[in-house]
Length: 152
Image (cartoon, rainbow, N blue to C red):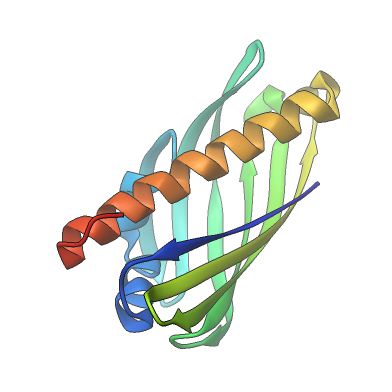
């Protein structure tokens, strides 16, 4: 499943880059995130609870930041296991582009889901994934506006 999008943020690239690499900011923006801790340089462990249709699962796993090109781009690669509910593996490519009125954040996510959750059907999973992505970026934009004192 591929999800992609972009969002214009009212801050310069360096501010956005720092925030995208701050585990505390990410923890507060990721829907259902209970824990997100750096355990090594460019590596974090996470625990996230997600509800997809009738299934609510708690995923634990790790994410690694790869292909770093500060402050312009990176890839986030991760995997989470949700017990009997299944697993999720994914990669997100993030690119920041300077704009006259801020920074354009572009993302492309490729996700693979297996186990019981995968049996729910592609439409339900895709709509939930898009909704969760939207919540993340809305929260992130709000955080950026607090840090910069600008309105989004």
